[in-house]
Image 1 (cartoon, rainbow, N blue to C red):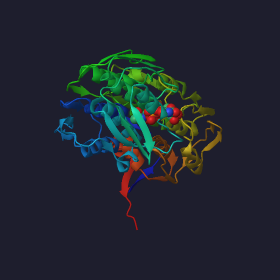
Image 2 (image 1 turned 120 degrees about the vertical axis):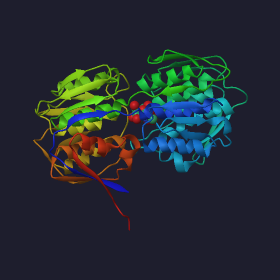
Image 3 (image 1 turned 180 degrees about the vertical axis):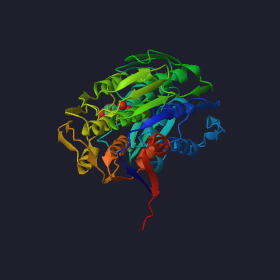
Length: 423
Ligand code: UD1
């Protein structure tokens, strides 16, 4: 298990390239199960979650070929096993994304109930209810979801009680091969949903309304292979911009998609950042100034993303003034707060809101990462601290950030990865 050592106090300066989006690549890899033809996925980020998804597909008998440009080809014509075992699913909640495709194309699936980030209770009842309404019989027993359907799934009018990203994706994939027209109401509108719909349509699906809260999917008899490049990672983009703002730096992120970051860019401007937005780049300059506190509330897209609130908490921790951050998507997503307070931050939790009173600077300390985005926020806190911070349990960060220490080093940060021997 590795640990990150950070010597804070450096303003980030320079340019980095943004990787492909984890939350887009994962459902698109699962979509490879919907066809017997090869699906080529390009702009794939190098992340542990991607390796986990490839391993999961591999244990089902799907062939995976990675070429010299790191494009991945999925060939599910060789599939022989329709089970997603607990050992893999427990490390990555997004494994649930194989449920819809397996059921739609093979009529059967057995998927362990997911684990993933320790951020409150994260049920999958919406996935199960929607697939049941499409004719699947589903039982949950011994920690497994066992699903089957006689013949094809049937189209349905699906109303999601809560906006769920992977829930919407599971239904989209299942409905692509179902018999008739499926309508998803209260669908998630995240850009990754649009990316998946674009990929499925290129595979021959008939999906309309992606990006709005009502999607209409006309099922087709079969899907075929294609080549598809996943969109840039908006959460990675936002994380580096927030790190630049918190350290009073000047950073340009390239190969990104600024339109997917509206809510985050507005908050960075409120924090005092000057932004120059290009077609596929964003340049942020703090001109050496201390950021101002911002207040925000998380909600499904296009509102402010839950995956970025922990990073803004780190920024507020050293900003001028007091800011409040309200989390409405997940319960229990404030585990980073106690670690930041150990670094000298002044943050208190009141229900689902944190009130952050900015201090001049934090002090380095040993801290522990608890989930993916909390890890990113602790790294930002380390970058704005005086002295040394060590971040333990960084396997969380490797799930979602490609080469984070190399990218931060290239921006001037003093950060290194140190292996920790057990025993
Ligand atoms: C996805 C993202 C994750 C992000 C989250 C919210 C992927 C792989 N992960 O996670 O990074 O933080 O969206 O933007 O894309 N819920 C139910 N029943 C369900 C499903 C969800 O009650 O069946 C609730 C959850 O507990 C949560 C809310 O709905 O409170 C949103 O969760 P959801 O959108 O499903 O998150 P994920 O798709 O798991």
